Image (cartoon, rainbow, N blue to C red; front, side, top):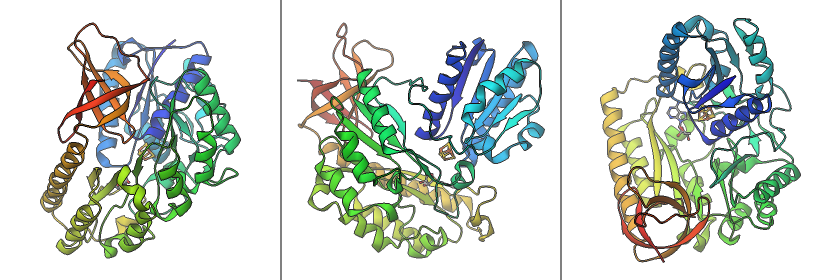
Length: 434
Ligand code: 5AD
Ligand code: SF4
C-alpha cells in the first residue's frame, strides 16, 4: 500500500499531516511523493477562506479522473472534513472516507475498512485524547525545524472564523509531555522547534505559556524555539519578558491585529480595542527593537468604511510590522459574521488590500535593508531551485536568506551558519558565508 498526503493550510495542519503519515507508516504503508504513484491519497484540507476550499474541490475533481483509470482510495481529513462531514460524499462521491480533525488516530481503521471495500466511511467524533499523541508517531518532513503541537482548538469566538468549529474547544498537552518530546527531537538531531496551537498563549498544560517556553529552553542542545499563533488578549507581560530575555526564544512575534478600527474589532469580536493591542505590544519594552514583528489583517470585513480602513493603515504606520499577511474577508459557513450586512463591492475590497500590501512591501523592504552589513546566524533550510550552490536559510527573526556559495559546496541542512548580509529585497536577504 502506497500513500500520498496532500496538505493545505497552517502549520497545525502540516503537523497533523506528519502524524497521519506516521500512523500509516506504522502499518507498513509506504509514503510516495505524488498521487500518481499512490494507492491511497489523503487530502488534508483547510477551510479558513473560500479559496482554500476551492483548491480541495479542484484536486478532488482531478482525483476522480485518476480513480476512473485505476484502483484508488481517496480520504479527506483536516478542517474541511470536520466542517462538511457527510455533505462531502454528496458533493464528491469519489471520496471513500472522511476523517475529522479530532479523530486522527482512527485513520488506520478507516483505511483498513476502505480496503475491504466499505464505502462512505466517516469518523468526525471528538476524541478527548486527540491532542495526546505519542511523540514518536509523527514522521517529520523538515530536518531544519520540528513542529510540536502544544494546544488544539480555540476558546475565542471571532465572528469571521471557522476554526472553533473545525478544531473544537481548547485542549492543552501536559507540559512534561512537551518537554519530553522536545528532548527526543534534539536527541534525533533537531535543533529548532516551533510550538503550535490556535492560541498558544492560553496554554494550560500545568504551567503558563511563558513558563513552558523557559522549560523547553532548558533542553540541552536546542538552539531556537518559535511559536505560533497568539491572541493579543492572552499575550501577557510575563510572555513578553521571556520573549525578549530568553536567548533560545527566536526574536520574532506574530501577533494578529486583524483591523485598526475599534468598530470593526468589536464586530469581529476580537475582545480588544486597538489601544489595548498597542499596549500589549508595549510589554516588549526596549526589547522590541531586536524583534521582528508580524501580523494578520482582514480587509473588507462587513461594514468596513473608508475611515475604518484608514485606521488599519494607521496601525501599519504605528507598528511598522516587518512582515504581515493580509486577506480579503471570506464569509465562512456557520460563522456569526454571516449575519452582518456585507455590501462593500469586491473591487473596493481589492483596492484596499492592494494598498495595504503595497505599503507593507515598502515596510518589509525597509526592515530588510536594516540587515545589510550585519553578521547573523541563519539555519540552512533547503537547497534553492536550479543552480548549484544556491541555498535558502532563515534567521531567528524569520527572514529568508538567499545564500550563493558557488557550485560544489555542501552546506549542512538544519545547521546554523554564520552569514554576512550583503543585500536586501522586499522579500528576502542576500548573504555570503563568513
Ligand atoms: N476571511 C478572511 N481571513 C480570515 N482569517 C481567518 N478567517 C478569515 C476569514 N473568514 C485570517 C485571519 C487569521 C488568519 C490565519 O486568517 O487574519 O489571523
Ligand atoms: Fe486552515 Fe485554520 Fe484549519 Fe489551519 S486551523 S487548516 S488555517 S482552517
